Length: 86
Image 1 (tube, rainbow, N blue to C red):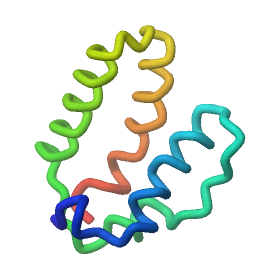
Image 2 (image 1 turned 60 degrees about the horizontal axis):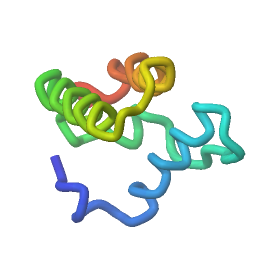
Image 3 (image 1 turned 180 degrees about the horizontal axis):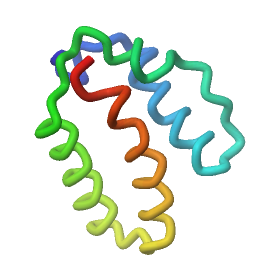
Image 4 (image 1 turned 90 degrees about the horizontal axis):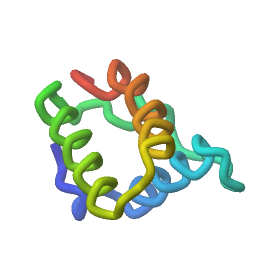
């Protein structure tokens, strides 16, 4: 898997755009679908789980309320099959 710094800049911004759109913000997601965006990366369940764990730690550190944390994780969870093993 390519480290974030080695990925094209457009891919970095599209994640934020996707979260913004998925949480009801004013953004429109214009990036690729998750399956094609992660094709060839070989992301494992362990790597995906580590991402989720890091995200939860960050949300907790910044005292994001449970409702909002659940909404964000609810957006990420269904993406797992399109991201892992591609």
